[in-house]
Length: 334
Image (cartoon, rainbow, N blue to C red):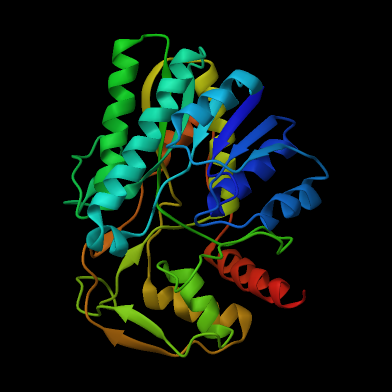
């Protein structure tokens, strides 16, 4: 099977491409490198010993995308491409709506023109908003607290409507919780451009003394230590979930939704303390005000993914912390 991966040189995309290649899929990657780096292309080839097709293109460019579909004749799509920072989305909502929605619409239009009937979409647990109870199940009410999450929810609606209009179309929406960690090789991992928006890259840079201290956004939430609680999942486990979803999408039709998480919640300070312990490093931090759009706690009930996809997370928080730091150490060895 040949799979088109949008945003395939990004953090989650690159790990998924590794898993696809190692499972003998043919892979075509489209990435505009806005939050990724071209050297990831060679690193993926080093890890897997396999090559793949890469186009430096913006998924919003429908004409170019159409040319790629015509040339490559792919069987299925995994859609990662999109802006993903909660805080930035609150500051620049129009940028998020334009990029995330238009890229999806141009992608699906190309799929329709070329007879490609299955897509796996990189959604998010942010579509649950601030849940009334935990753990979160897929049939919970949907709402959002920030524009980033709203774009994910809108895209879920778009893909569901496409499935309703065409009963041969298959869309699987994977609602991620909080991906962290890196490939065990240390060659690929999360390396955002500029100041990190996500917690783990920030912790890593503080531990490596690239940044002075970690800002912990709020310690007055209704959690065991006052800091936000999240369901952290190893990015390699997450990547493997996409292979299960591709298999499911190829054999089914309609819109389906799955939580990809561990089912366990850890606070910001739990993560900091675990990171310090397993890596034997210091991570200075300070408490600052809450960040717009954040909620107190969020963790998954992942049983549906186990029952219907045959997937569950295997790696724990210690491996996540160890692999994250190993990645930054490997980058320094260059």
